[in-house]
Amino acid sequence: MKLFITITAALFSSAVAFAPSASTRTLIASSQSQQTVLFAEPKEEEEGLDLNLEEMFDMFDAADKGQDFDKAIKDVKKEKSD
Image (cartoon, rainbow, N blue to C red; front, side, top):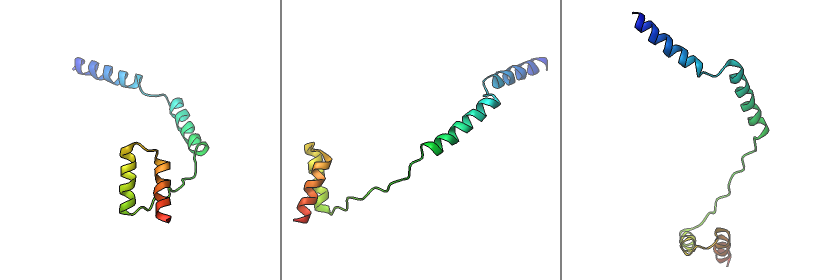
């Protein structure tokens, strides 16, 4: 019985020793809420590429050749408007 109490007390004290204090929890909670307000940015929706199947294959070919994405998409869109 004494052994059980000793082990339980040792486990409890070691668990309490590594738990954050109340002031730390308050500090963490307040800093998280400030970050949310300070660093929040409005979400901008990405525009879709709206490519047909032929244009998708052109983009895949450009990627296989290692071309720059922006240049490749401009070329594909230019071909589409012609």
